[in-house]
Length: 243
Image (cartoon, rainbow, N blue to C red; front, top):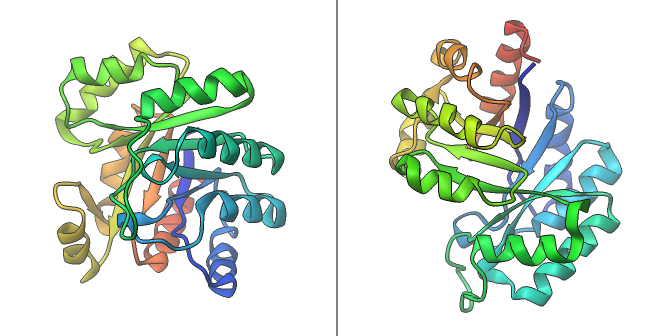
């Protein structure tokens, strides 16, 4: 059965975080994906949120680690802290340019992979983003690296055929596709905010997933700014027998 991950937006308010978690935990969610400083705007540190969630709610949490905010030493320090919290899975990404201060340009994602793998080996499960907008040769260069899982952007239409190629190249890696959902007036806002990304109206979710889940190991539900849309989507997935 396909795994279901949910994107949980970071917040500095514990009561708001707990309210969101109470709504989500009513469903069989396999993991919570936690972005860090979306659009470069600082909120609460994703690794700390992940540690809190996993300790308090016993839900698997997968934080993002922004390389534009850290040097090599800090990255290894953060990963060590995550392992102490019992978190072994995380996503390495460059991240959006920070709103405050200067970006740290010390590591790219592949460099960071080598550094973390060199220190912590197989104790960690490292993921990265892969845009299916790129050509197949570029995508293969990325997925041949020693990542454990890949978060797929733009997994729709003719791009789905590229996933078959990824599967042949990396039979051992987990492929999880972003599914950005919307409803009503939120659809236009998300299309403006996430220009070029496929946005799926909840009303058309069934048809979208019918095809997508043949290609991937999991889906990552995202609806920036609208937890209610996520909850409605989880209700639909429950009725579809996916949860």
